[in-house]
Amino acid sequence: MSAPQVRPFHRDDRDQLTELVNTHVAAVVPGLSLSVNTVLSAMTRQPDEFITDAWVAERATLVAEQHGHVVAAAHLLRHRADPEVGEAYRNAGSIDWFVCHPPASFRPDTGQAADLLMAACLARLARWDVRVRYADGSLPAPAVYGLPRPWPHIRAAYERAGFRHTGDTEVLLIAEVADLPPAAPLPGVRADRTVGECGTRFTARSDTRVLGFIEIDTTLDRPERHARGGGLADIGNLHLAHPVAGLETWLLARAAHWLRLSGVRTLLAYESSDATEAIRRLTSAGFHELTRTDRGWEHRPAG
Image (cartoon, rainbow, N blue to C red; front, side, top):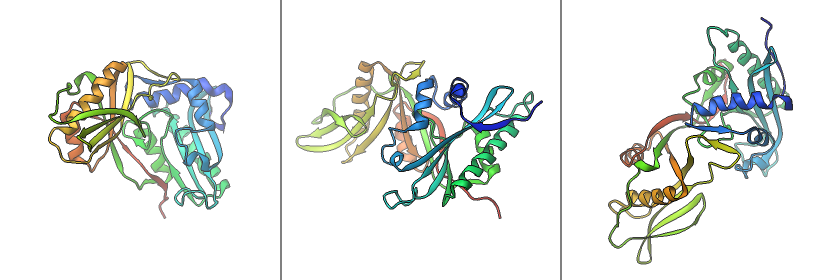
């Protein structure tokens, strides 16, 4: 069999690339897939990252092709070196995402394609002469960032190339809205619904005192994304200002009622793996662990 060939992305690759990306997305978030337009748009601009995206000076997408088929792909970023750029990003290069078919007994050359593509990525970062080299798995889909545990073949490719996990680990949780607590009164507490920083905010108030709030983002299931299992939302913020018994459950119930009216079936939440009490409370309210993702990878080859 002919060896894989690494080359720049061509527009004719868009359908095969999107299929490869969706294979990885579907292993993290059930029922979610991306359109070709979403994948292509994210390769030129990341509007959700309105701060860090403005710091990007150069982007490159590489693919590994074999027998006319895209078997691996990677998207790279080079950040500017001027003082306006955040210190951690200043003159930094990163593999924003890296996808490839996992090794299989009938495709023993798949690992070769991943390693050839990784070598090309490192060569591009070297030509950019960046100060530091990062890696991630930030596909343009909700809850797909860091290095999700369902991607052991990507982790293996990163580690073979000398990338090491230097950041934290986050737990991704999921709940069916139907399983969330039903709305019940909390004496002396009312809810106000307003626009929040990360979605629709439900604020718990007692007289003029703010007790806490929850924000839910129902824009994850945008038209250019397709959630086959129904609407998708996530908890953007959940803050308790005062330790009122049952307040967190009360806020979740208010949010759940709104999600049902919105036709949303699935709710995501995110917590640090160290936040054991917060995870316990969410699981007791109807959530369960979807997966874990390891954030922060840096190129630190041995020796």
